[in-house]
Length: 167
Image (cartoon, rainbow, N blue to C red; front, top):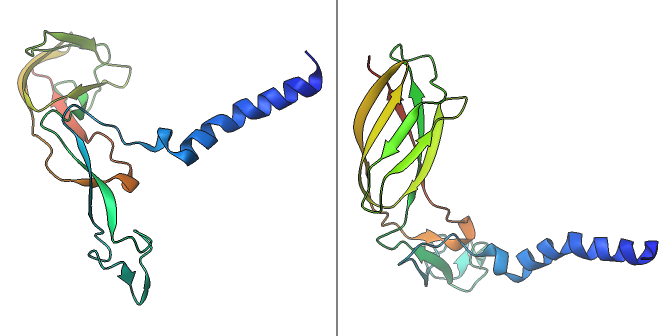
């Protein structure tokens, strides 16, 4: 292929993600089963379209913005940090097991003693085992109920938990 054609092709490939983001397909929020998009009154101007005697900067005078209303199955990203019984030393390669209706989920912590999982609302028994100790606990994930404006990029909520092993 000619160098000029390669240059044009590479420029098109670099600009495609920006173009797709600009027109919309890559700007959609993370959606789960049951989530819905709806128009609601702008929280800045309370649906008047005006803010300080000029067009509202959030809704641009349209009076409404798009919100994502979470469904009953919207997951929460649970990030856990596992520590030895001293409460200071991280535990790499600890064995984890969640018990849930869909089956058991097995994983190990990384070098910093961390793990993560997207969990829908519910209660999840968790067992952590390592040379340093073990722990049995229950993680409870509450359902999300608060509508989130789509322009704020409503990602799945994140929760960070600390687990200290027992001898």
